[in-house]
Image 1 (spheres, protein in one colour):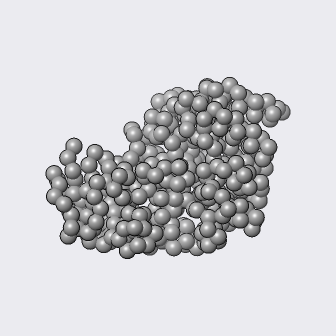
Image 2 (cartoon, helix red, strand yellow):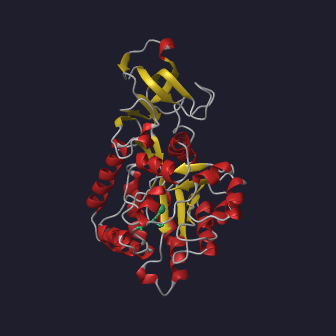
Image 3 (tube, helix red, strand yellow):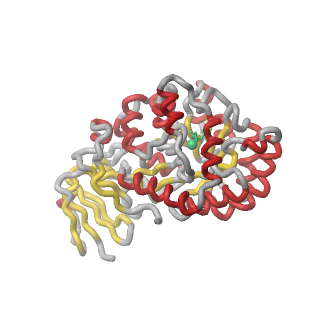
Length: 388
Ligand code: NIG
Ligand code: FE
């Protein structure tokens, strides 16, 4: 494959502050980009662009790094639309709904689960996402968790073992026995299919001691940790994530000053999931407060059938701007470079020489339109990323 010159880029977001206007987004106007064999080989002003084997003129459209969606639960069967309707009428979100998806997922054939992931990944791609993390967590048996991760692994390298999502009904009287299963035979069965290990650390799911034990056992087996924390109320999860030096802690809906200070003093990325607040009618956390405190922030979809069934990173960007006090530039950065940091990746989330040539072309002159024109399908083309 030869070199491709993309020229006529009205606005290029590189996420490299040494490029272009020197802002965090490293904006270049009237830009060009050269890619070869899936990598960026040249970035700069169109007037200075080198010759290439082929060229594409974008006629003033904007180009942004492909979105890095660092949190999703795509391996499931069933539908929980009625739960959503009830919440919009005033019911509160109850994590117990997870068990109904577990029942539907366990009884679904592999082909149906795979087709569902393929459908959602295609949806994501149409909306500019090029990297996605996919969790298990709706199987909760040795066989079903390994099956979910094998299916996820056909679409992404960013696979996460979430056997500790909730205690399944058959272990309701023996939660300690379930933790032993997760840290023993289940971990053994999934370790070859997973890169990460996650725990839902929340009242009604797993407490801090259980979460610590599970994360440390996973780490001993070579899986890096991440955590669902402080989603349904204040709790110990964010502090635990910082104590263990996890790469990311996700949700962060209910934070006190000590949580924010712990995040600011750690390298742990706070991943905000505004689609969840939208779909559960919970209060939005303040991205502004975190950024002003010096915390690294990511945005992700949390696409799942219960708390948030959107696959749209542009929607998350728009919500972060409207509801979380983030500027459009901060929100775009969090949905691209922030997501990459939340996955410990430096080859995605930016468009500088050497990075992967994963990008989205927008039917718009500027990335600002992602928030300015909410709900409009602005992604004209998504290039690179994914494996299937
Ligand atoms: O990230 N919080 C736990 N897990 C998912 C919700 C799963 C569900 O409701 O099915 C989440 O919000
Ligand atoms: Fe989640």
